[in-house]
Amino acid sequence: MTKVFFLTDAIPFPPHDGRKVPVANYVWEWARRGVVADVLVAVKQPRAGGVLARANEFWARVRPFGPYFTTEALADADLSRLRAAGPAILFVAPGRLMGLALSARTINPALRIVLLLNDAQWGMNLEALHYGLGLYPGGKAYDLGKGLLLPSTLMREMTAYRDADVVVVQTSREAARLPWLGRRIVVAPNAVAQPAIAWNGQQSHEFAVQVNFTNRREAKLRPFIQNIWPKIRASEPTLGLALFGPGAALPGWAEGVAGVRYAGPVADLDAFLADKRAFLVPLEHGTGISNTVLRGLAMDMPMVITDSSSRGVRSVISPWPENRVRIARNATDFIRQTLAVHHGQSAGHPRQVGSWSENLDAILAGLDRASV
Image (cartoon, rainbow, N blue to C red; front, side):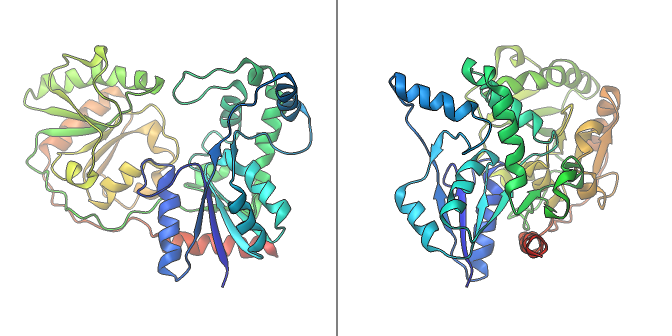
């Protein structure tokens, strides 16, 4: 029986963010097929000290060929299991761990690598740029050395994708940004099984919006909360807006906006969404497929999503009637569509969105194509 490994940077049980959801669900899908996958968690290496150590680190970054530079490492016991596995499949997420995956393949050439990309909308360039400049989602880290050595890091990051046997993305639009991968790319949208709770928010006056008030992306929500939502509220003063997501409190600029409350992190997403009137996605662009959007689709919950953020997910939302998933062309249309949802009435019909089993079959078929 084929041995299966997953290489990730955090234990994916339970899945705690969008990136880990595919890892956890693919592990569970293998288990349903009678294969117990071995999850390998890479850990941060302590920063080397001393002049000689820093010089070696510098050389690892700048040399045009050779091993990838990585800040994580695998334990010796993990490396031993990979070495002794023989023919095996190694799933990798996030993409920056490809360096470790390729190192593992040097000790076991029979490993076949499947790279699970959470977002390929911007191709590899943006990720490589962030890595090269030392900029991370928190917006706090900046490493001048990485910035100065961007060309070498950029090339290494860009070629990392080419070294996987199969690269898995969520949408055909993402796949179109990686044309050089040819037959080795597999489109497998995140899937959602039938929710535990049926949507019952037909009579509710509260809408839900997912936010992130822990990093610099919070500013993207400011135009909606400060400008668009007050206009919706002016037309219907009874409406409320429940913001959920990471963070301890609302930022100062969002305090005092009428009808807005901050629910913070949500332990049971199904229960939270079930009694909301609709799910709003007021983003200027979308990257990949939001797992929360998929959750709402599985519950047959009404949604209003911007035109720009819908472009990567239209193949997924297209089977839904227009009055269930409304695509707003601009800010004025977003207001109109939100009010239309509020005044409309429709019963929910929960359904399954995709299948992790189908996704895994597509990946295995991709590995077969790659081996021909």
